[in-house]
Length: 149
Image (cartoon, rainbow, N blue to C red):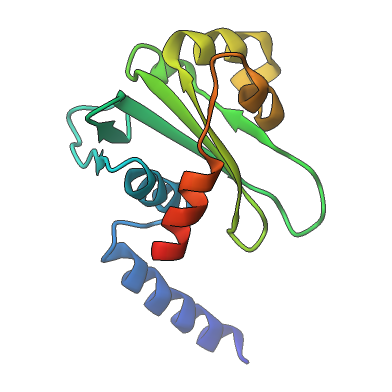
């Protein structure tokens, strides 16, 4: 297939995904998390700092990582400084190269911020976040939601 044809195909798929509010894997992670937690996505450009609003948990910042096809095992989830104070829970999702859910966890704000400060570049290794004593493993909820999308 020609490069121009590949690009046209990519743009058609991108437009189809935007109908669902998805621009990239981060947008897909938000949609998936909202479905898994019976929450609503934050579409406000004014109210920043969180991605979904859950009746039971409050404001949730969704951060995700998709493992590369190269086999490199990069699982760290970045939590930028500007996010501090803007959410109640961090939801970390790890995807395999085919965008299948490897795992997911929820971590209270204070625990997520504390963990991120211990790591270089404020990136929390997925296994570290999942193993935290206050973490809630939501892998199965995410996998079920993924089957429904």
